[in-house]
Amino acid sequence: MIKGIKTTDFLSILSDLSSTITYQQFNGTTDSIYGGTTYTFASDATKSWIFFKHGSKIDLAKFGIVELADAYVIMPTTDSISFRDRVVYSGEKFEYTPECLEVLRIINGVSLFKYFTLKKIGTG
Image 1: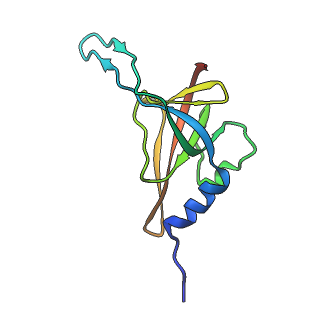
Image 2 (image 1 turned 180 degrees about the vertical axis):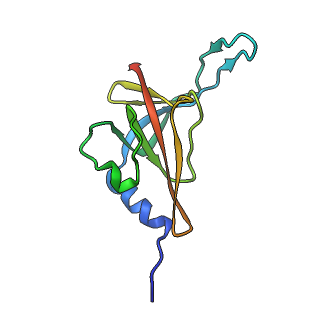
Image 3 (image 1 turned 60 degrees about the vertical axis):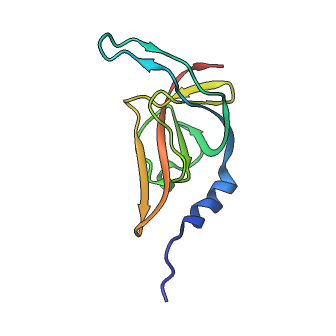
């Protein structure tokens, strides 16, 4: 009998490697004519996601990540982020920009996890 992969396989990894990060959901507006953006955010939320910066000791290939970015966040498929949302970790602020990527990892027909590349935008 062959055992298949299950979503709980990722949840076990998540419980081992997750960090507590601050998530800031973008609530601002963008002017479609002039391109100006008003940056406002919902109240900070605490998330337990796998977070690591480029050059960290975590082997990116284990997660199938080959893209170069300032940072990466890996989360369950039930979570998501949108453009202009921010992640704050250890005093550094990262944003999910249009240049960044969202990838849904599907293994053997099972949606296992999502990962996002992030761009560093500053500190605090």
